[in-house]
Length: 137
Image (cartoon, rainbow, N blue to C red; front, side):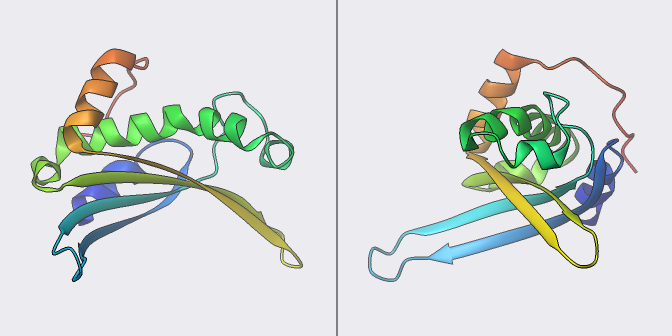
């Protein structure tokens, strides 16, 4: 998981990254679910090049759509660099964008969750412009 953090933190605009390997169990139904969660603290510009203060006034769906390319890029990097992602039932990328000026702070989180195979299908259909990816360590 440390490698996942290093890969994502190599992306311009990412301030910090957190990785969680979550296991949930619903005792009532007996359902078990394994989820890989990547939290990305984003300080770069959004896809629409709106500063965060402006994006707070956007409709929620507009903000969500603006962060989708960031989530796609992170998901693609993780899928390319971490073969264990396919051992999970679900793969979630959370893009967190905010500010802290000492006397006040705010943040908004945008969550994108799919199965690993759904991410693969989605990424092969959308194919964002390629940027140099960090090399495997």
